[in-house]
Image (spheres, rainbow, N blue to C red):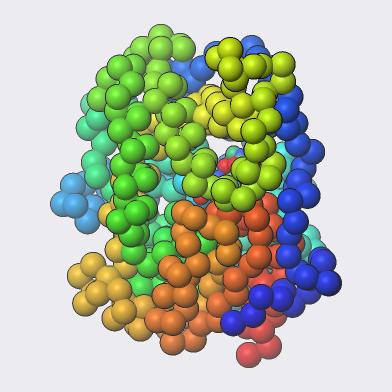
Length: 411
Ligand SMILES: CC(=O)SCCNC(=O)CCNC(=O)[C@H](O)C(C)(C)COP(=O)(O)OP(=O)(O)OC[C@H]1O[C@@H](n2cnc3c(N)ncnc32)[C@H](O)[C@@H]1OP(=O)(O)O
Ligand SMILES: N[C@@H](CCO)C(=O)O
């Protein structure tokens, strides 16, 4: 175990301070947007904001719950070139509200930044001059993959009829995508949070197809505390009368369940950041000119309002529910003799990364993963940003990933 990154950007500590990753607007009021709240119709189903997604039609899929999806499609993006012997493929798996757009690098005239832009690209820790990188939108998602907003067998959106998915189903679809792309073995499968759940599931479901894994801020089995937090988020969405039990796609624009989804995001976002950060960054500062004693908000309230509102404009509530339920049911040990046996069966070389201030996926869960996988190394990053550290501390995460990839190449 180490707490010092191999190629630290901060050679003195290798740790983050509360210096913002990007300019903050602490204390400022957010300008109202002219975009309406998430439309009830599924705008997220169509179009391609970055103009470079590809789509794989993977046929029917039998689900772990006993259900069946008659037609599965995954949206995905790729960067770099697959080498002749197919040994340089890296699979990047996004978290709950991410998508296939990991990085803007593509040389395709669409330099839209992605959610892990400093991690993936030419010269980046996952160097696309060397590695062929594939990133699918998860099954159940709302960014081009089959999900509850997709047409069901009768051509109407699935809505409430969408079957229960598990992380295992999501990985089964990703295995099909690998078949289609002609990738027999991934040099690396990497992801954080919900992406990390799938990383572990990949290593247990298809060990012969995974050379190494990087599981970041994640767990082999979600805990009672996590299930409780996820439950309240689902309750917030379901309590929104505009959710209509999941059948809201025909409602007029602006009449979708944006209030419930925004509230779920607020509950979640508090778990994505540390108490220390929220206290030091916002403390008891009032928002702009608002007076809390006159019913106004503190800045931290405004901050959560903003994140809730922002997600509700870009994400589908049903997908949020479907994916959250996959986290609730996640158990690597199910039907495998328990978590310890499942972890012991992993043959991939494993890099496990925790964030020390993560209150959603606490470091103890990473320690359990690393202790259980035969060939694993654990690194705990010091960051005050909490769970979102995996997104914000790209230098620290990237240094470990780069070193891990180089070690593998030297073997
Ligand atoms: C793999 C994946 O997970 S992909 C999904 C990742 N993306 C997301 O989760 C989207 C939500 N965004 C985030 O969670 C974060 O922005 C991160 C993790 C991506 C980056 O974190 P940071 O750079 O620390 O951003 P931070 O948490 O400060 O949020 C910044 C936003 O809060 C707003 N904000 C800050 N203070 C306030 C305030 N007092 N009142 C209202 N809004 C505020 C900023 O204006 C900024 O708005 P913008 O994002 O619309 O430009
Ligand atoms: N901000 C991340 C946190 C969940 O891991 C997301 O929304 O996907």
